[in-house]
Amino acid sequence: MEESLRSAAAELLLEAYRTGVPVAPLVQTHPGLDLDDSYAIQVLQARAWVAGGARVAGHKVGLTSAAMQRQMGVDQPDFGHLLDSMFHSEHLPIPTSHFLQPRVEPEVAFVLGRPLSGPGVTAAEAVAAVDHVLPALEIIDSRIRDWRIGLLDTIADNASSGGVVLGSTPVPLGAVDLRLSGCVLRVDGAVAGTGAGGAVLGSPVTSLVWLANTLGARGVSLEPGHVVLPGSITASVAVRPGSTVTATFGGLGSVTANFSPDPDPVEAA
Image 1 (cartoon, rainbow, N blue to C red):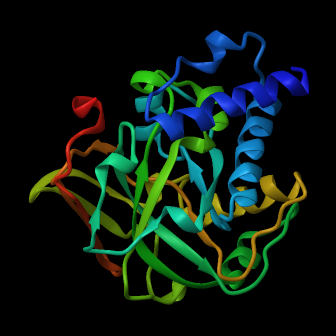
Image 2: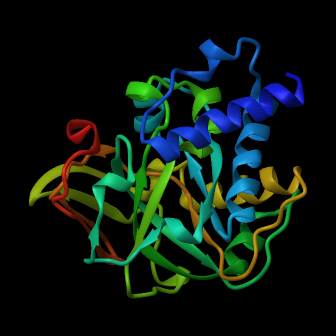
Image 3: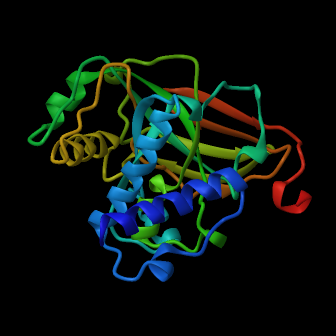
């Protein structure tokens, strides 16, 4: 795809952020889109956000569990950028109007204490780079209408990133076996999903290794203080204004996201 077409696709997605109006799948409007095009479109948006004053605060890995791959109809992981503006404080109201069609999923967040740069990163090196882990809720969102996404569309759309809520009690990585750590996801008190860390590529650490090596091949390093979301333990659940979502993890504690009862932007339009 020509650079001008990549730029046009990136601008289309940026306009969806500005207007709150989702767009048609890029694979329809931009025939011939391939994996390199999609990541290039993602990077163009990240550069625009940074130029506007945002800061890259980490990365996310998406589509790592069998549940999420089935839900989205894909067969491999992807990654996206986390910006400082995406982070929301636990328990404080999160305006639902900031999102187009939000869903929430539970994750274990890695917070790095050392740089991590691939390719060639091993599991031992990845573990040594982690300062601590936190329970987390990722708010995923799509600028693609009705979540009609495949792998190429979600990559171009920053891996369907929306927001992050981190728990407040850090836990040393060695204090919990992330593969066996169970999770219960509740929406307004009702159980909405259950799972264990092993659903994420066998272990969330495997996801961290994949990310470091995949980014390293593209000339990007993970930095101290960066947050890495390795992928969801359960399928995502939709949220609406006024929803309260809590994820409770074995050995890690819990994290809660409260969505303010503001009008749904689609209904209010």
